[in-house]
Image (cartoon, rainbow, N blue to C red; front, side, top):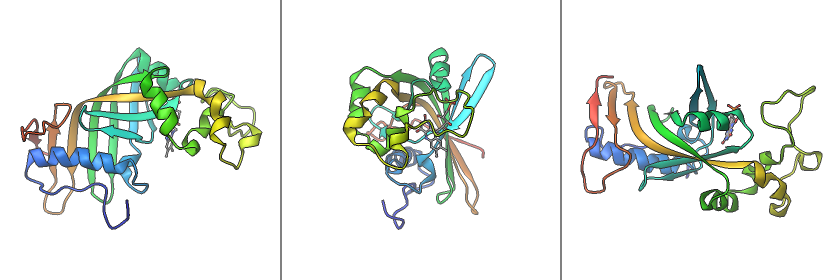
Length: 212
Ligand SMILES: Cc1cc2nc3c(=O)[nH]c(=O)nc-3n(C[C@H](O)[C@H](O)[C@H](O)COP(=O)(O)O)c2cc1C
């Protein structure tokens, strides 16, 4: 994706069906658009009385099934939170398109199935290196510590060297339940909600307008 082609784009700001389609097209483009705000959503989880947010990388989008994907360290606290309560919210904002999405989704954690295996094989080694850490993410450290084995400091491992990291690797699949869209404009802001999970493909409109 070059800078001249923005990842997040809306062709017609008055057509709900078109907006819904463009949301999914833009999400798909965001995965490979390094400077796009939608590539780095904020994931909120809750567990009991605790609500927590953190940035994740949007790794894959499947518009046909209405699913978004990220990956994480199985040992990180968010995994236990997701297993305790699968209800999540993902917040996206792209500054260039002045457009926010608040996505409500149900999360599932995948470690040993074909989905996890497919991600493990297809993700670049540079994005898997972090799973080599000997310590659980978030565990106390007695000094500044990157949690990378010394031999991998400052270099990207060979794929074969990643084997010990596989046990720490988990894919999070988000089954989208609703998308709230907010577009900021000098002409007047616009807001809509799309409660269904995926585009119909036959022009059916699932969404509705909201007052911004
Ligand atoms: C730009 C950015 C991208 C990140 N991407 C991920 C990611 O894809 N997966 C992930 O687990 N953590 C990612 N993190 C780290 C998380 O924000 C968080 O600090 C970490 O996963 C621990 O979260 P937890 O303690 O809530 O489980 C990213 C952080 C930043 C700043």
